Image (tube, rainbow, N blue to C red; front, side, top):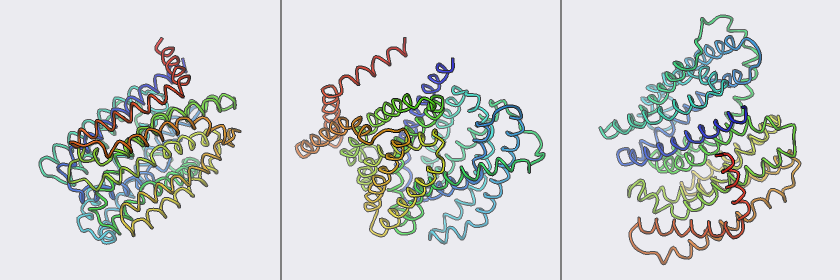
Length: 478
């Protein structure tokens, strides 16, 4: 029964993530035709500030609900609800009064109005925190999928309508408010948890202590993933940040949604077998290969046709985004692998090691953003790719040693896949100058060629793995 519920969760969460990715990509494609790059840049900076504020507001407390064992769950949920609302209200108020100062640092007066208008957003996000954790603890995956997919659809429709009406950057802010409000109402209505009066708030010292450690790691992750936005806005201006943020979002939607789905499913799955190290090793090698099989050919292929993709998907005005996607796409598979390796390290209980690696990764990426921003957007993405490749090595080594695997074993698992992707990239690059015609014709021809070459190579060199995967899939259906 437990395995069946876990399998159902994999299907539901993976399916909802896929739908949300498609909705987000289509929404960006539409909004890019009505919202300027400068306005996208402004909302990108606001999103960075919002993420930091939300992590401080939640303070890792919702995880305490999921981890709670025994009696007293309602009391813990009540404490988490009121503390997150109190912390988020304080942060929202502080940002409201600091809006002029932040806008002055970014040299953009309009940004002060955006921060002030977003003050209530933090409280709305925090108000659903305890309810969402309550639903996740009960493993009500169907409810989670429905609420998140419908929320994405509703908020995207609102943003598109407002953008067509000429609302500009305010359409993007309205999208965030609509999504936050819908998710809050959905989880509050159907979670089954009802908060009581804020009694005995200071009994939450153990929760705060745990939350502070988790928040530290989350802040390091934010520093590594979102520090680029304020740095680029300061040194290159919000218009260039707009080109960069849209290109970055497209890769993040594809890679981070995949990584998030893997993490949400594999953390409980690996935790259930962590006493069986041999099974852990076999599971790690199979999932690692599956992640690379999905992300490596798709991201390398996207990098090869990035210019054509941008012209068709976003329009002529967004041509500078092509090179940004080309370099960020190459970093995508390694980002997905790092997320999975962090999940394995966390499953093994090596949280301190995770914090150390997270600190090094944050330092490298912030350095790449800071140095690259002085030379231009292209240099930012190139140095980010370099930083990602550098940090992937120690994360990979630490994970392999934690599982008592040799690096040779992990590389052997992926060697043929890397070779096949390399051959695909070489063939497409050689044929590229020979393909003439419209942008759409080039995109279709080069993409089809790359897909045919990669699948053919996989059938020749990885036939046993592919047949084994298909057999397992048939067993699941049966």
